[in-house]
Structure formats: C-alpha cells, structure tokens
Image 1 (cartoon, rainbow, N blue to C red):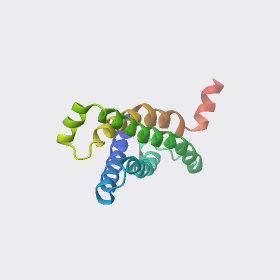
Image 2 (image 1 turned 90 degrees about the vertical axis):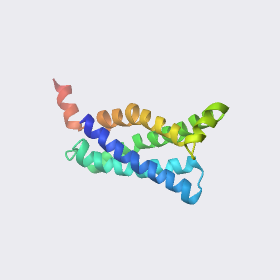
Image 3 (image 1 turned 135 degrees about the vertical axis):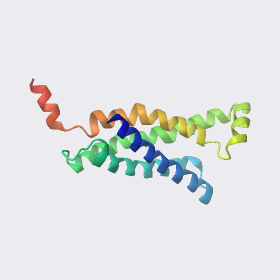
Image 4 (image 1 turned 120 degrees about the vertical axis):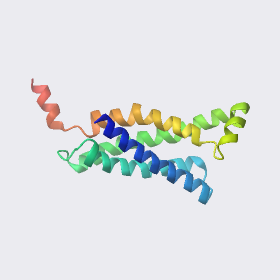
Length: 146
C-alpha cells in the first residue's frame, strides 16, 4: 500500500508542478497563487486515484471519503502554499543562496516547492489518508469490541 501511495503521490505531484509552472510561465501569475492552483489540481487527481487504486476503499462511502479527504486536503494546501512561500522568501533573504539557485532555475520557488511538497506528502497526506480518510469505520468497531 505504501508503494501505491507513493506512486499516486508522485503522479499528483507531476500534475501539481506542471500546472504551477505553466500558470507562472504562461499567465505570469504570482507563484503563491500558482502553487495553490497546482495543489488543487494535484489533490483532485490524488483523491480519485487513492480511492480506486491506492487504498482500494470501495467499502467506504464516497461522500464520507470526500468529506474526510477535503478536511485533510485543506490542511495540505495550506501547508504546501504557505510552506512554499515561507521557505522561498527565507531563501531569497540569503543573497548567496538566491544567486546560486537563480543560476540553475529561472523560477526560484521550484526548489522550496519540491522540498515542502515531499515533507507535506509524507508527514501529512500519507499518514492522515492511511489512518483517517480511507479507513472503514466497521474495521474500527471490530477492533474496539475485542
């Protein structure tokens, strides 16, 4: 299950990054707003794939999964968006880091976004989806009886 979750997460991250970079490059949108839109698109994809394939949660009602996923997803979007912003602005305040990264990346925020995305993906998204979102309540009741 962990490997399927990582695969699903990577696919969602690709969608997130493609949308983010395209919106910044094509529409010159501020990177924080673009990061939010990318997280939104990646999250929709991730929820669908996780429900059908990763956690095979057909035993869970879609409306409950959607409600629980949304609560976790809001936290994820906030952590990704604010984390990317805070990390990017922190690195920009260090001249040698800014100058070095600017040599390799035209859009400086991509490096912090990658790091924040990995941290949020493992420590927030995966853990809460595994424990809370895709868990069947009947399983919980079964273990409480014993």
